[in-house]
Amino acid sequence: MDNRPIFDKVEISNQLSTLSLPEQLKRKKVCRFPNSSEAQVARHYTKLSTLNFGVDSGMYPLGSCTMKYNYKILERLASLPQFMQLHPFQDDQECQGILEILYKMERNLSELFGYSKFSLQPVAGAHGEHTGLLIIREYLKANNDDRDLVLIPDSAHGTNPASAVMAGFRVKKVPSDKWGNVDIDKLKEMLSKEKVAAFMLTNPSTLGLFENNILLIANMIHENGGLLYYDGANANALMGKIRPGDMGFDVCHLNLHKTFGTPHGGGGPGAGPVGVAEKLVPYLPGPIVVKEKDKYGWSSYSETQIGRMHGFYGNVIVVIKAYIYFLLHGGSGLKEASEKAVENANYLMNKINEIIKVPFERVCMHEFVISAEKLKKDTGVSALDIAKALIDKGYHPPTIYFPLIVPECLMIEPTETEDKESMDAFVSAIKSIVDDANSSPEKVKAAPVTRIVGRLDEVKAVKEPNLTFYS
Ligand SMILES: *Cc1c(COP(=O)(O)O)cnc(C)c1O
Image (cartoon, rainbow, N blue to C red; front, top):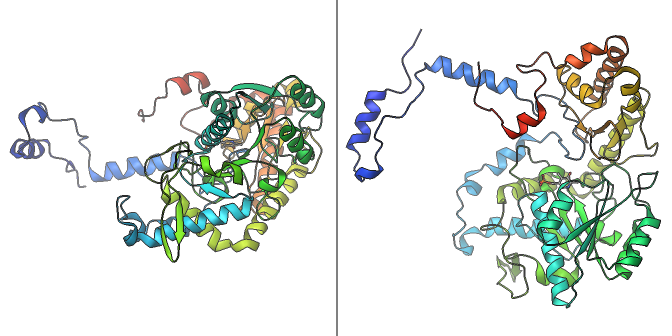
């Protein structure tokens, strides 16, 4: 067996001493390289890769964060040297191709979602929210309006209130009614007392439900003089069916990394473009690609825009992947993807409803929530225990305990890329966990038992992550 070390300490230290680096920059000691054979290293990393779970390993039904399967061709094409070797300081004349893609993507998004213009600069959903709220703040300032209250429904994604506060607004919660919609009477009451800067909403809501009163809500907010903000992080129920711009939303962000098939997680990389209605276009962060005659170039700086939200032009590679996704599907294909996302979620919801109750018995959109409240009362097995037991069955757990308004909540999104067989297998896994909960709850409470770690101290794991230890 070849047991040669891959790094030779002596050789490296010799090389270091011959470099003509200034003395103070040179290492005083040889750094500690692992003294392992190539075989050991290959096995170590191959083993590590099998400990991870991703959309390529199996179904990843994470509600509110669309984890669909991503076509490999998107990665292949986005990694072409023609894209990878571009430099942001390159002359516009030399990169008309990429400028054309960014221009067309901006136009595609505006048309698909019903806006005048999009800025492709923000690099995450939360970053897009923050950008959208800064635009609203700037618009109000330009109109000498000092309102500073942002309303957010109690089912909203946690980034919404955080973005609003970071943009200098106060935040108040609007309760949901028993159907999971915005409580219109409560909203009316709040609007009668205070002027609101904006209402941040997502439709379908984070419960996976379509807000039937959206046109009424849009009217109420606009009559009060405020703006309507659309959290479009998960737009895969919408494409080609309905446009947030038409529902009355003045500002919208999208998550290209959720809706348009880009792998994400662990913080990036993403793209959170922000689209606005005509009256807000002057405030969009630039530069934005413009087309004059047959040439593409960048818009010039304007006094009114909120300034840059990111260096250079945002995460261009993510935009390229979304653009290829557009081209692969075409208009009718995007609509079909949305229909399939909704069909899959309803199929799965109805199957699971026979095992664990769905709190809102309505047609859902691309995702739905279930409540393990009764199971917990009967057996002691909680939403967390179900999530952990699903790991042993080969699934990434769904989102749990969110939205906060549903007790023992599990939030499930199959996405359009799952087929009937994989969804049926998931239902069987849930069924077998519930059977176990009834016959031997301690077994479920011990899960996961197939991974290298069992139950973590959840708080400690977040606050003091130990990511290097491996034995
Ligand atoms: C994921 C998500 C966000 C935040 O997006 P990031 O890219 O993670 O910052 C915002 N709102 C909703 C509804 C989401 O699902």
